[in-house]
Length: 259
Image (cartoon, rainbow, N blue to C red; front, side, top):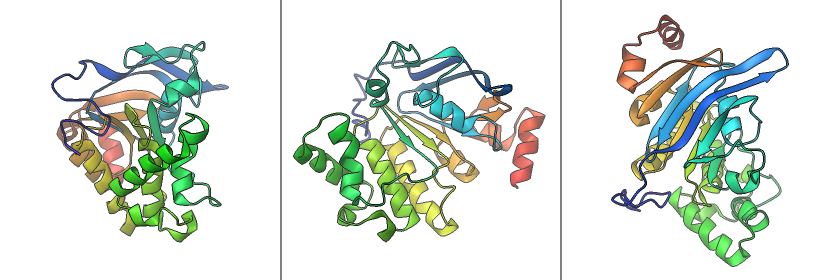
């Protein structure tokens, strides 16, 4: 797959200019506990924005609000210029334009890999089984698992299961890929194979918003790093600046704890 075409099907010369994702003033609270406190964020086409921050800083909640799994209390989110937080919109149709990969693999253990990858296409998007399976097999080959289509999840390593989850998120050709700490459930020796795949996807032009605690990965793949603290973006910028010479004391304290 060429870098010009990209995994999300946007051709370089004719691609639309502007953010694929725009988050403005998003607030989310659970009772008295404020999780997101006025988040502003843009992600342009073919760019990778990495979210860092301690557990409880709001990274996962932000991704869930973007994927319309959690409602926002205030603010708005736009996908390719369309406000997706408008409650009158069809959430399933909007969600189909995004791919979400969670910390846990969330594969159905009683279903073979091929069925896990095709399920949403067949049931939600009403794609005929032959076409859905053709797309799924092509995506499994893309993530290096063409020979495991008939396997059950418990016959795969953790890294392989996470790659199946990524294939499932990609099979619908999403405009935006959301990834929430996708290596946190993996044994250390399996982390590299998943991160290498994400680096390939970035090189192919996928637009990504990634929450991660892997600072080495953030340095390699991010176009912008955003440090979240107590539901706010406290610092953002190029990886070398935020990770190498942060301006904010809270950012320095967080990175020092990881050293």
